[in-house]
Image (tube, rainbow, N blue to C red; front, side, top):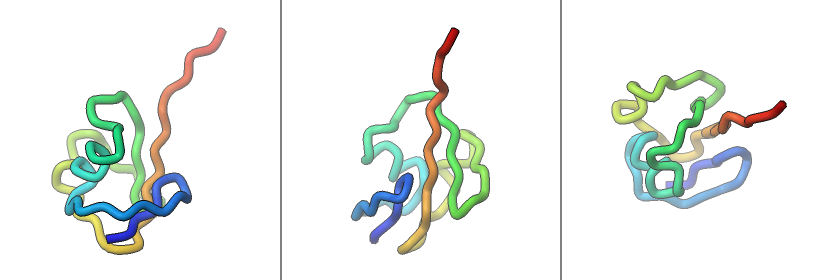
Length: 65
């Protein structure tokens, strides 16, 4: 299926948000996620089903000083 990650199209075979993040190189990283504009907590990612055309936003924390 085709999903959009931070506005870039990707073809994935993953059925869940957790599986898609793993296949796209985000596995194990501390990130915030949203699907179609709705926040998804880390604990909910394995049960969050994806559909063709879903839009996923990934935000990684930044350090500054």
